[in-house]
Length: 193
Image (cartoon, rainbow, N blue to C red; front, side, top):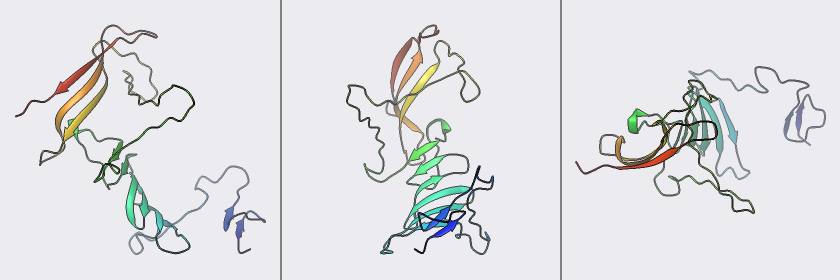
């Protein structure tokens, strides 16, 4: 059939790798090249039969890149940030460097959608949560006037993207306790000048 089996005598795909027990710590497959003479060789190329376009998974400089016909569409940066439509995460309001950034040149490439498909009245959710803990997974209780979430609207002013036009914030409005989180919504706008 032209199929290759590694650890498998009856391969189901063109390349079928089977490991008995736990896979090795180094991984199932290694793509390695000399970084100075073949910097682009650590790519996994996905090619359709017509060879009209190619998909690439590329690792370089500590970043994992997803490419469509050699144009970058998504980047998993070495610091854990995810960028869609650009090669670097841009800091914006309050000098925050976001964990996820979507950047585009029209409505479709600059949008995000959350859809729930269930036969009920229940909605999809977008949840912002605040704790006073200093580690991930913490449940340390918040306090009166703490900011629970902040949605900021900013624009480029010719220098950077840090100019805030308006925002909506939710803050604790009282003493929270188990099953009790009093809150208030605050709306902000920026005047001209």
